[in-house]
Length: 187
Image (tube, rainbow, N blue to C red; front, side, top):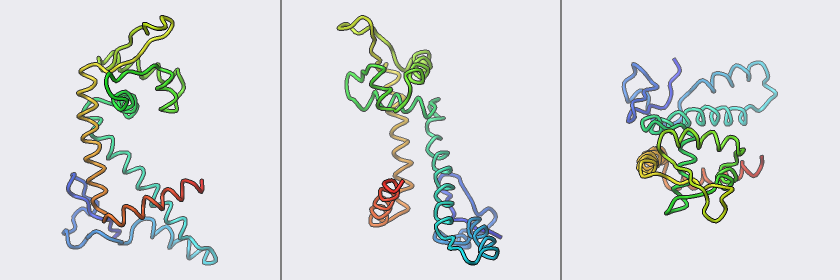
């Protein structure tokens, strides 16, 4: 039977039916090990360690996305909504930007930003107003409701990151950060 690292504090139990001491944290065989073992039998001439590393990374990223989106769902936000509201909130009071700034910061097309803004405006989380200095354009700002929503969702988002990061020591976090920076540069 394949066993995974047990995570139970947020309701996940990926060693169902096993006592907690049978599935402790740390390296235990997983699906990736099984897959590598199968390939190693077929191709013993290849070093599959890199494949195993990036397969685990892919699995981690998918699970991370799911876990990080949970607080957003609870606040009725999509990841895209969160990005727009977060960008507006991060610029500080009065939390206003022009759509082209949002488009550039979020690396999205203007049409994509417009679609997100339409949804957020309908939900009462942002408002668009004509730019008094240039009546051909408008500014987008958080409403009071939008500020409350992003502040609550952001606090929970950070709490999720902190909970996950606390599974590592400070030294491990620093090493992982350095490793990820190196890998990003290698791409």
